[in-house]
Image (cartoon, rainbow, N blue to C red; front, side):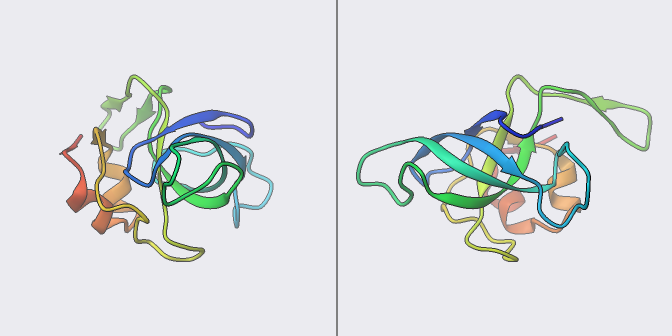
Length: 124
């Protein structure tokens, strides 16, 4: 459950380390995002000379949340941190980076982000 102003870690190699959620586009009045949702983020910390810079506003997809998510089979999935993967552009489902670190939830692949799922180390 990601709300506006939530700080997330970045699970790819774009150079951003920490981002903050500032919006949830195309979801109407909904205020929280779950695993597999596309959000708008602003970069808070980034490596020097990287692909993205501090202050950039970018789309990202949530791949891990601390808050547990119930699956249709009755099981729950939760992770140790809140993390996202930065996307290449608005309306694009491809990641900006070339590697994805850490596990991702199965819901990300079900949401149509198959490229991110293929780059991930593990899918839970």
